[in-house]
Image (cartoon, rainbow, N blue to C red):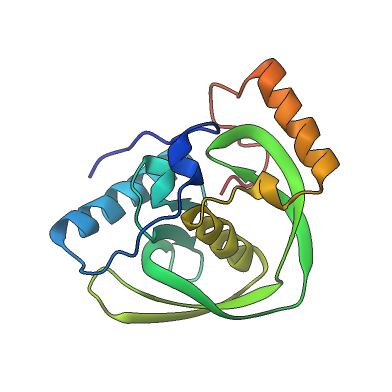
Amino acid sequence: MAVLSVRRYGDPALRRRAAPVGEITPEVRSIAGDMIDTMYDEVGLGLAAPQVGVSLRLIVVADDERREARALIDPVIVEQGGQATAEEGCLSIPGIFASVTRAEWVRVEARDVDDGPLSIRAQGLQARVLQHEMDHLDGVLFIDRLDPVTRDRIKRKIKKEGLSPEPSHHAFAL
């Protein structure tokens, strides 16, 4: 497997809606494996294909229960509820963190790399990671979910100071 380059804020690949995967080929399996390696190398909890320049509806997430990462192909949130606010960061926007409100729990349906069905009911941090990564599939960044004043302040800071050259491990980067 290989470690891929993570695209940074400002890269147009992060703003495109990803295409459905469709058929799961050896290439798709290889990309998923490389994404898992990249996520761990960057010390992240999740990674979406657009973050590595691949415009496919594919995410990888760390799974605390199984102590391994898993790939979700063409994931869809089929149920959600509650509301929770917590600090988020993003591997594509290193050094920037802000409080984001999301659903407290979600149920996601997807396929695994062997084309088997997956249904995941997640709450807390795992629900947040899934929502964050699935946003990337639609070209949405966590800063887009902030109020306009906070979002503009962050954008001005990035424009003035640039992004951190190294991933920040201050909080969970997704």
